[in-house]
Length: 388
Length: 123
Image (cartoon, rainbow over all chains, first blue to last red; front, side, top):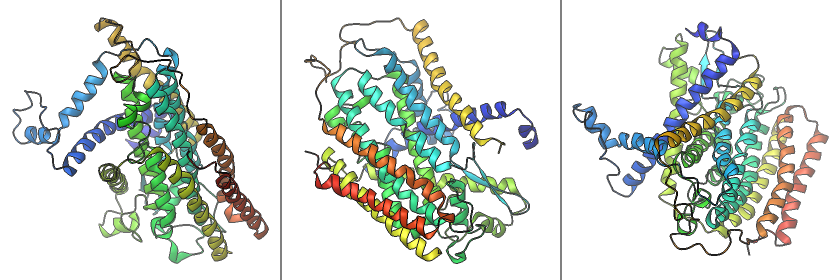
């Protein structure tokens, strides 16, 4: 079965992977939107959406009412509505760029997914092979370079809508995105300074960051440090990364791009139907990727606990001789951490009020950026002193 | 998993462009064949919370946004140099480390300068 897959032509393999990504990302976007409504309902003490059910499914005894309570059918109704409702193209928009913007939003979102490793395959010799669609050695750089292209879709959507609210929303959002990108990039540099100790191959690979946190790092000079998660080694960097991530994904309390109270819907005010749906899926895909990168860099990736790598857990459970089971377990652990982070995103949304725009710029440029530079200087000097 | 991970990445960009195109075409075909177009003056109007749109949509906005964009450009180019620095940290000599330290202090100095000039204040 596995051999059959590897014998296929690389292009066919790539297309199969592409299909796999769509089959994962789109339903996750839908389920996240449902989870968002359910979590907000739970936080506010409401039942949330729990009515929709197809009449023929209501006959299924236990599962029917359960899925109804969970609101699963609302997701399907929403998806169907998005595809079939009237796709109005308002008369005043710049048509070419208006259609181009949602496509541009999806491209970086779908491309970055491929560079994020999501699990590990421990072969018979105990060697850990990271699972990723494209296991590139420039992992982190690829993620940042491609995902930051998302800002073009926002500014293009705002401009092409030819309307006041989207335009203001687009300008605001793009200024916010570029402001927080600096802190985001600066906060991860110390992680790689730490990983690239003398005697190791220099790398920016996300999978290597997890390997380091598993403790099995070739040529490790600081054996006692291996296995510790980076969130304990660099809590300030993790905090800066998390806050910047909220701003980069336009989530509360940084959702200046939308800001319903003052800008209606922000850059996608004039959008509807499936074009709006693409923006929506892209936003959740960015959240998913951001949480994934945070998990890989700071939360130990697919390792269950600090100082307990996946290989140790496998030997405890006596499943080390079943590589596929271990692989599935590592994917499950990784996904559990990502889902916990996404829940954290929703939790924050219903806890903290939205910032004012000047507060956002002040936080980005006058608080986070100096903090990120100071953090980098501190770790560069400290790591150089420890290692050399 | 394959021999050329970056080739996979390139292939994936093509797939990522194709997916939204296909989805939008399906939506467009649906609209073309099953939904009669019913445009009206109100439906095509600019959305301004239900009231008549006033004036041109090409409004003036703060020039300050540009200032932030220029500052971002300056800092982002500097930050870009830090990533190769992190990747090559394992083989850097002490002299190179000191040079990078000076570079990072320059980064901080740029921020201090912009701050001092008041460019970071949202007025």
